[in-house]
Image (cartoon, rainbow, N blue to C red; front, side, top):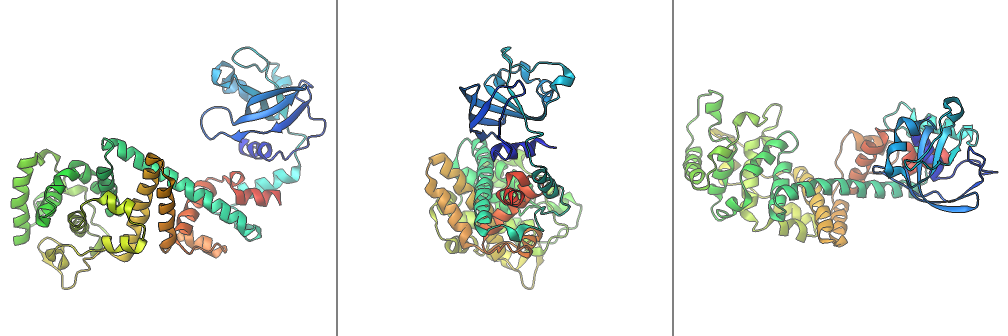
Length: 437
């Protein structure tokens, strides 16, 4: 028995209501069960009950055993003074001999459901939540009406955007509530593509956007600022590797030495060893990613205007897929010329940036400006992009969930990570449908 099952039973009122009485024998009628509280405090809020013909409005707290109220010390917590019903599976109060009171000393009505719940319902719920599959409902998924599935996907997609918007809000506060700086740092982080995401974020924190913008008309100086602050102009010295003569690197070094003194950047310089190179394809080397980042910063007067103003995924893709400076069209690293370098940001990488940079930024901006149109724009961009392919989306496709767009992919990934892996089947519309069938 789990509290999650009791949440499910109470939310859907799936128990025998005949001659419903509290453990003290008082007649009780449920006018409204209330709403699930996902924050601290009692489990359901705004419930309405008739107890002994007196209407009560307040919260409901749920436990497996009556004594859990005391074990959790709710009797000393004034936040639970507005609890109007203690819902339990098993009333063990006779065995403990202890009375259940609120913090103010008033007695708390208790309702136990152990003998009012259909065993078949309990067995179906247990079979689902105890299933060994990574997607617990795999065996029954195809029996669920498509409308139910779509409704759940819409819900989790918005949940995912809310969570990502909260991360952007944290970054926004760290930048002194500067949206341009926020867009810059978020883009930098995602240009690192997971393996170098943290070093890129550190770099953006050490090198303010306002400094780069002063040199936007001189792309070589933007590169010097980025590569120099990243610690990659002296990478060979750090690893005691003989350095191949390179005129371009020498030019960037001279520029950086001057700019570092001008802006006081020397103390902010990162160490070369934080950058990851192992098992990366040359197109993902941090040097090439920085060169692409530099060109993007030089080409855009305002990242924020680009990200929140552009409504077309195709136009955003074109803005992101620009060639870096001439040097980086034939190099992946300093001093090592490549016969044929894939210097332009790839299509999949550009799509990844839109999904992980532009969409969360739009969601956060929508909240900040209280303008839902920006959130609608974020959703529209996801609907315009193809889905990413990974193990999770492959598993859903195998079950018959057609993952056709980035919207579908993001929603199915969120559903898998936040519900399937955590066995929250009784909080999922798909799982609830299966249990109630």
